[in-house]
Each structure stands twice: as C-alpha cells, then as structure tokens.
Length: 258
Ligand code: SF4
Ligand code: SF4
Ligand code: FES
Image (tube, rainbow, N blue to C red):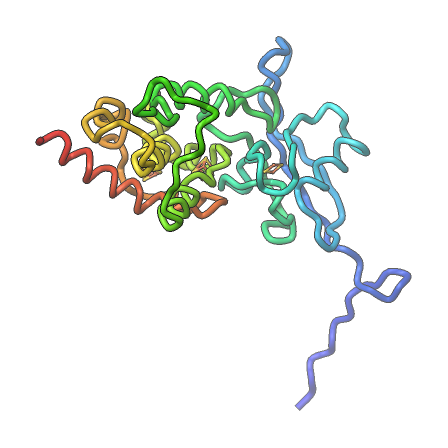
C-alpha cells in the first residue's frame, strides 16, 4: 500500500509555520457625521500568541485606520466598557482572543444602546436611567443616618451572597442578548432584575416586596421576561441570572396576591 504524501506547511525564516491570516469585518457608522452611511469594513492581520481584541483593534487604529472608534478602559474585564458583538454574540473584547473566534470575525456594536460610532455605544446613560427607575440603592430605615457611627455588622455568609450579585460590571451583554429588550423599549433587562435581587437581599434596605413589586411587577419588569436565559449564557461575570430572575418572579407573584 502506498502512503499518501505528507503535505508540508510553508515556513517562515525561523522554521515556524507562517501565522494564520485573520480577517475582521467591522461595522462602521458615525451617526453624528451627516455623510456617514452604515457599512462593513474589512481589516486583515496576522494571528499571534495571546492576541486579544484589545491589542488587535489598537493595532488596526495605529497602523491601518485611525478613524476606527471603540472603547477600552481597564483591559481586565472590570470596567465593562469594551462589550461588543463578536460573531453575533455579546462579549468583553478585552478578554477575548481572536484565535478563539477566528479566522473570519465580524464585530458590531451592542444592540439596545445608543450608538456613538463604530463599535462604541453609550451604555452609561441607559444604565443610569434604569438604576434611577429601579431606585437601585440602599434605602436606609433610619433617615437620619450618622456617617460617624460604626458600620452595622453583617453575617459573613449573607455579605458573600450580596457580593456575588454586586459583581455586575454593567457591561450590557445580557441586555444585548435579550429578545424581550428588542421588543419592549422600557424593559429593565436581567441587569435590572438582578439589581432588585441584590437590594432585596440587603438587610439595611428597608423596602418590602410590595415596594419592589411597584418597581418591577410589570411587563417592563420581571413579568416581561421570557425566561430563555440568553442573558445568563452571555454574562461575562457568570452572575446567577437564571436563578435570580426565577426567584424574583416568584416573590413578585407572591407580593401581588398578598
Ligand atoms: S448582569 Fe452580567 S452581562 Fe449583565 S450587565 Fe451585569 S455583568 Fe454584564
Ligand atoms: S431570560 Fe429574560 S432577561 Fe434574560 S435574555 Fe431572556 S427575556 Fe431577557
Ligand atoms: S476594557 Fe474594561 S472590561 Fe474590557
């Protein structure tokens, strides 16, 4: 039996195979420029070890196209500013390797938020509006709170449970993945429901379930959620969104019939 000839990969000067070519198809549009028309633009680059979108997009902006707009602040998955659609899925671009999603890669801005330009969206205005609607801060029992007083002690296990929900970085990935958010303009999203879960857990917060029902006991709140849990699947901080949404829905149903 004759063996099939072995195909040799072309090699570069060091004897290593040449790097894989990556093609990035990037959404371009600047709504504040009257002549701008939404379009896709393709950039090419070589793959490299550890190449994240933070490095790749900055490289493109430095060497190929200084007009490309996108956001990065922390580069460490902490600030939430770099979320974008990578091959149709919301992700934190600073924590994503091109190698894991390439070689053909489509980048688009997160849906559901006002577009600033290209891959940059204004999540901050939406998050602030949602937080104000849901009054997402601790409502103290004592209105004359003394800042010089020693902090109240909290059971460490409870503090840990609150911390678990407090890890949200308001990146907007859950909202971008949410079908209800596309259909209901005022839907608070998993991020909003999760905030209610966080403050409901906090013993310093004086609000009752009846108070929380006033905030999210509607179709724009927890009853609009279709429970398909795309939010849970894409949350880069692995927050327990599925469990929290189900839990808050049960509590709000109970509050409605009290
Ligand atoms: S819940 Fe998760 S996906 Fe949603 S904003 Fe917070 S960190 Fe991002
Ligand atoms: S489970 Fe609810 S909040 Fe999460 S993506 Fe689906 S509809 Fe949106
Ligand atoms: S740059 Fe801060 S989370 Fe990606």
